[in-house]
Amino acid sequence: MKILFVLSEYLPESGGGIISYYGGILPGLVEAGHEIHVLVTRADRVDLGDCEIGGVRVSYLKSDFLRKATSGFGRYRVGYPTFWAFLPAAWAACEQTRHGEGFDLIETTDFSLLFAPWVVAADAPPVNVSLHGSCGQLEWYEHPSRRTMDADLLRLVERAALSSARAVQTNSDANAGFWSDLTHRDIRVLLPAFPVSEQAVVRSRPHADGVVIGRLQIWKGPHVLCRALEAVPEARVHWIGRDVADETGRPISQTLRKQYPRIFGTSLVHREGVSHAEVLREIAEASFLCVPSTWDVFNLTVVEAMALGTTVICSRQAGASMLIRHEENGFLFDSEKPSELAECIKRVLSLTETERTKLTDKARSTVSQRMDHDRLRDERIDYYKTVRASAVPKLDDEWLRAALAPREAGNERSEILRAFTVNELIAATARQMVDGIKRRLSPPLKS
Image (cartoon, rainbow, N blue to C red; front, side):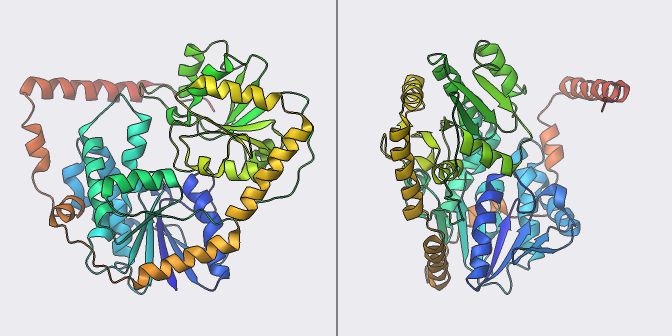
């Protein structure tokens, strides 16, 4: 088959979950004899030259297509930042590939609304939408106390679009259940088929250091871990990942340091700028890997830790918890109960070497059986063939098409401005002028 993957990011970049997922899967499809193309839509990668990575043909969005598509979404410029940020790139990708002409199958994601043109275009090839964490889900869990019209409309559009898409698939039972309940359709679960190292790692553990791998953000559960560590003073955990702003605009690290002054920076140490190779070494040498997420579609670090022989403590709210059998090949806890996490940490730290080895051997066996690369690759290929051959007609939703498709610019901006009084407009203009002057007068940042 000749398959096009329309993605927000891909190799040779690093750091994102989309990259990790597809960077492990796509070379295997090439090895199986399929022609695999990737179109990357990242704004900072526009107009880059084509390349080939592991047999995968990678191309990038062209600025001409992006510029033309942007002009069709002026109605979302004010008040709808997610639609304004992502719809132009999604449609530019569709137009650049001539609506997928010449491909047997298109796969894209829920993230960045890349599904938008493909679920409403009448002339596209069969399309599979892979669910990795939609913009609506991320907004819901990242900003639980902030509800905007943009986010509310976003979730309604996502539900309608994924209800009408030809094929929808995800990588965990939890996320499949979430979307099945919303869309009233079956969601296929395909575990990520990527090579994982099962080499035994000889390590010494002179201390109780554990590790968390992932961005420091609210739904990854740093506050859950801080509260648990208050009850386990002998434990120390390294959190490796980029610092993300919270709802106030401040880095999460600042908020945690203020809320948990005795924990953050001592019992919980944050680090950034660590390469993937070093991350794997950190996992292999850690006493345990912790996943304290309050929500997570999957979390690939669970698989990496299990394969490397490191004990895993995983939140039941993370999709990868489907691989864990409590106290048999890892430990599970409810992220709403930090005391459960504290007990798990205490239990792991008290394991004898014999107990630890027995548990991690079972974890390796789980990875070997459930994450077998060749079997999962073949299962995915069979699924793609089924999607391609499916005679299920795509639902024709004119309302959805009107919401997601570009159209000629009208007088949307004028209509928006009419909603404000003259005094409000004058005040807003003054604020803009003052902010602009401050930016011009501010001294440059020191390197």
